Amino acid sequence: MKPVRVGICGLGTVGGGTFNVLTRNADEIARRAGRPIVIEQVAYRTPNPECDVTGIKTTQDVFEVASNPDIDVVVELIGGYDVARELVLTAIENGKHVVTANKALIAVHGNEIFQAAHEKGVIVAFEAAVAGGIPVIKSLREGLGANRIEWLAGIINGTGNFILTHMRDEGRAFEDVLAEAQALGYAEADPTFDVEGIDAAHKLTILASIAYGVPLQFEKAYTEGISRVTAEDVEQADNLGYIIKHLGISKRTEAGLELRVHPTLIPKERLLANVHGVKNAIAVMGDAVGPTLYYGAGAGAEPTASAVVADVLDVARDITTDHHYRVPYLAFSGIGENIDQPPILAMEEISTAYYLRLLAVDRPGVLARVATILSDEGISIEALIQKEATEGELVPIILLTHRTREKHMNEAIRKIESMADIAGSVTRIRVESLDENE
Image (cartoon, rainbow, N blue to C red; front, top):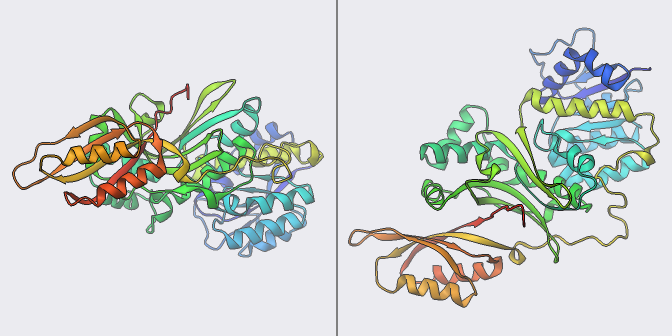
């Protein structure tokens, strides 16, 4: 059959991995696709010494690739928002299929991109945008297609997981482990997207849209990072039988959909609690299949290239199929049309259990007043740890609560922090059981 010709935009870590996997495994990929897949052109600013581009057209202009009449599939691996968006929309306008690993692009501009692609009858594939080499998008979109998805929760940022793992294993401070992650190349010089949860929120937005059949709504995702988690919190969570992980969580409720990223205490026996280092994992609960877990490398040159090339292979298989018969971009037909869509809930309307840590003056009656404030807000205490203090010291108090609505906890914390006997702000971390019966 006629070869499928590919143009790769970006030859950095993922672009270089994609180039090498397509080249190295060309015969195997051709057998799977039923036709050869050929790299026609590569656009890059800086050469990649790991990639031999001899005999392949090269350019520094990515839009040359998007306009090249000999190219069937544009692989966008330049990252970012603005140029990537223009590149993808240009490729679509020129009737080219698109493969991307750009989670920020899909989370923020995906609705526009998919509409444009639908009108032109082309494919936009984005498996590598979430969890690197783990085929979780294909699993949600196709493998779990018979299921009503009840909830999903994932460790979807390897940098944050690396930091929390080493804080727990070695008792180190956040800043110390972050510096090590930067030295090892796991964190950028500006780590904001990773440690403040923005990267995870991009990925969660995509997963939730596919799981529940709703438009991409990144702006409604609640996002909280791990920079305020201390070694003390990690130790106390361990004492209480929990491990702190930075999770993206989405749940279907009667009131609407939850879409939130934040540090979370989860029981030690849960599989997600035992995912360490830079690995990613996503747990998905379907009504028919029950709990499933997807684990593996969430980043890196060839793990991510594995997903990119799998998407190119899928495009090669479907390229002659009428677009009306292809799997919808976000798994469901009619997204964004006049169909009842569940709303994304504001964080203050969501209910979880809580871990609270506060510093109190060692004086009789302080704990009783804290308990009264919680009781007045309808919050019950599940567990309590109060450390011994020498004379004149502040006493750390650790509380675990039962489930309550966020807005009630916010009001309780406001009242506790206004007490004269409480020093500084109250540390609050949400607690999730992630029980298969939930």
